[in-house]
Amino acid sequence: MSQGEGGGRPEIPIDEAEVEKLAMMQCSQEEIAAFFGVSVDTIYRRFADTLKRGSALGRMSMKRQLYKKVQDGELGAIVWWGKNFAGMSDKVEQKVQSRQEQIVYKCVFGSLQITDEETKSSQNESLESTQSPKLLDNE
Image 1 (tube, one colour):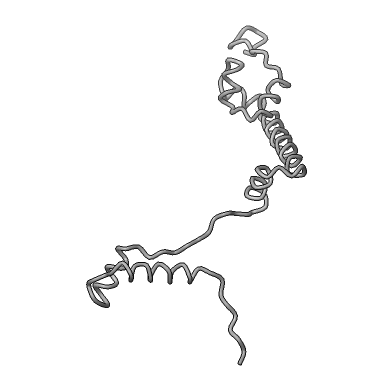
Image 2 (tube, helix red, strand yellow; image 1 turned 90 degrees about the horizontal axis):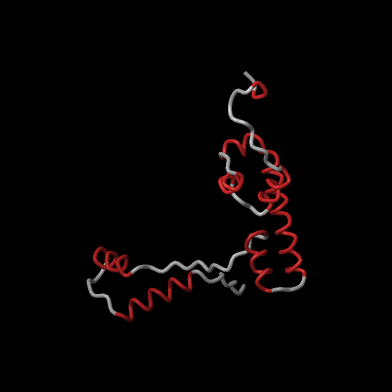
């Protein structure tokens, strides 16, 4: 039986333009389904393309607004744009030998006493090894 003959539940009218607006706001399918009082399956089955289009348009709109702020010189927007779209990072990698590693090393290869001076020296050496290499003078 088809729905026209009285079989199954009546179809709930859902405004496709409203689905697209909600998707543009990056609402989840669960949120959109709850808004219309239907299942997530119903939303996806009937509006998969609309969901994709709305979500993409929303991201584009957000990027357009962010890019405008970047062009206006807003520092926060510039930093966020650089990190998320230009592959930039403000992380500095440092390798510092832990106190436990130093103790194990000393137990295996040297004396058992580790002084604070040795710890500071070891940490300084580790930090120096992460700095950019210096060119040697050609003599």
